[in-house]
Structure formats: structure tokens, C-alpha cells
Amino acid sequence: MNKKSPLSTSPTAPATGSDSHSPSLAVSYKPGQKVQLKILRETDLGFVASINNEHEGLLYHSEVFEKLESGQELPGYIKLVRPDGKIDLILQAFGNFGTDELSQQILQVLEEAGGFLPITDKTPPEEIYNQFGVSKKKFKMALGSLYKRRLIEISEKGFKQIPKAKK
Image (cartoon, rainbow, N blue to C red; front, side, top):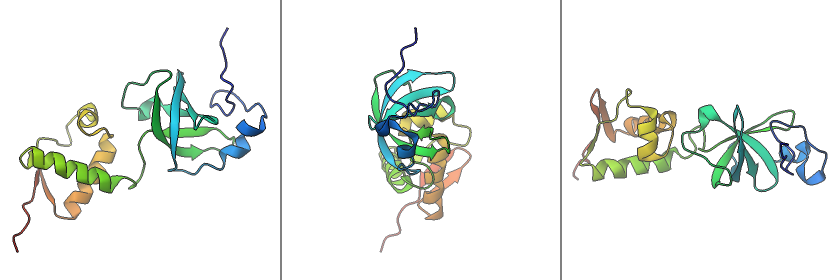
């Protein structure tokens, strides 16, 4: 017998009609909103997670770059509240949100590494995640921001910090 969670706006089950767990309350979430997640179970599509102990949402396998386990708690973000009240989740802020913080982290790691990192377009996403804790897409957005601000140079072998001009 498969035990169901008392939370109701599951991506795999319809809402139960309980006021505190109804799909109508799910619309109060906004895309990009930071929330607290607790992993409940794994499905064929991904991981069902409790959102702020109020609703359930889904983290799709294709958007998870780390090992998750039932009971694990971690921060996440609302990706989308669908018309049927189901909630799609992500673990990293999307768009440019968080790019400045990541850019600073990259510069710090770059400085600690002597000004050069051998990370290129061919670097596996897992390697980028292991070093920076973000997806390759998010990493490339931050790298692009640094490049546009002329703080780094990008080559086939990696990227290097551009020395600051002395005044």
C-alpha cells in the first residue's frame, strides 16, 4: 500500500480540498520566490518536495544536479505555478537572479587559483556543479557577466582574470 502525504497539491495527485493545502493558495507563490523544501519521495519525473510545510511541488530529474534523499531539507525556488495548482520547483534561482553573487564567487575562486581556471565549454556540468554548486547554464551566465564587465578573458583552455589597471 502506497502511503500518501497529507500535503495535497502534489504534482501526482489532485488537491484534497483542504483549505490550507488547496491549489488556490498555491497561486500566492511567485516564480523565483525562495522557499524551504523537504524531499518527500522520488517519482519517475523527479522528486516530490514539501514547500514551506504547506504544499507539494516537483523538482524534475533534468534540473537536479545533486544527490537528494527523502527527508532532506534545503532551500529552493518556485519555478512555476501551473493553472491546475501544481507547482514546479528548482534548486537554483533562475534568470539573472543570483548571478552577481555567483560572479563574486567565481572571482574569488579564480584569485585563489592564481588567476586562471581550466574550465571551458567542454567541461562536464557535473564538474562545474562540484566546484561551484550551480548548473552549467547558471555558471555560463555569471561568466558572461564577468566577461562583459571586462573582468575575465575566455580562451579555448579556460578563463583568466584580467589584472586591474593601476591608478
